[in-house]
Length: 161
Image (tube, rainbow, N blue to C red; front, top):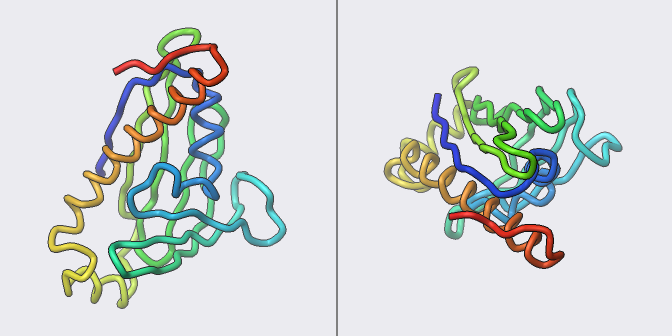
C-alpha cells in the first residue's frame, strides 16, 4: 500500500466534497483528467460506477471504476477494473476548520493483460510505481492549493504551507 498525507486549512467536508466528485479530478491530478458518472448517477455513493479519463504525455485511456467507500466527510474509495488498484482518501479533522488528508492506493488483484503490457513497455513511465506516488504528492498539494484559493476568494480562510 502507498499513502501520502498533507495538512489542509479547510473543513473535512469541504475537502471530501472535492475529492469525491471524480468529474473534477483533472483539476488536481497530474494524470486523471476527469470522469463521467454511469448508470444515471449524478454523484458519489457506494456501488456507483464511473468512467475515468487519464493521460500520460500523448497517451490517453479510460478506466472503469466502482465506488466502494463513500462516508462524508471521512472516507472515499473506488476500485479500478483495468489496473486492479483501489484508490482512496481519508480525511481527518484536526481542528474546527482544518484536516489531515491522506490519499492511498493498494492492489486488490492482478492488472489485466493490457495494463501489464503497458507497464512493462515503459510507455507510461519507466518507474510507474514511483510516478504514481509522485502523482499522489502533486494531487494533495493541488487539492490544498485549491481549497486555500477558494477560501481566500470568499474571505473565510487561507491555506497553510
